Length: 233
Image (cartoon, rainbow, N blue to C red; front, side, top):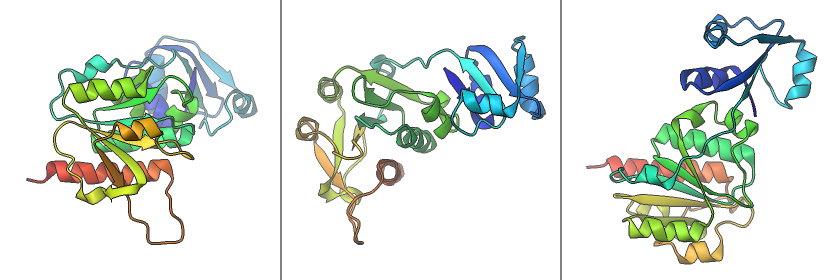
């Protein structure tokens, strides 16, 4: 898998990500990154910018790494967490949304993100780039069945908070204690069965002509409300 961009590469170096190959543009001159890459003892593959443009369809900033595929965490990472705050994504498909959600979750101190294996965006180069490297500080758990996972969470003391246009004002929900916030698909929202398994449905009031928000924006609003409530005495 290719990862690219200065922030992403810096994060990969700091987290000791296994690097297979290094590609640099002839004009690349970031000494901090160069010094970090030299410590890998790997050969630098020098390329023209146009050659690197063909490798990834995005702004690579003159540095691309071929790294091992992303390794997902297991549900067991939640076992020793007290009053954890986690986020479940119900079939988010857009890698830019996924990456932005990871960045928001990391900034808010969310303990883990749960995604389904099928019909959803996996961790890929675009997700990593959009997350600006914060993915290396986040537990991302991939599961076979969301509803079975919700049952597992409930059995372990979690309150499940879904999000939808029809529900309780998101600012009036109690987010203290073990909490899982579920964000639905960009077009369909959360699925019917997932919604039935929720303890609460949080809704963001709308006052304009548009009655919905981008998934990553809605995630940020609800998560930071939860963080605020959890830190109140």
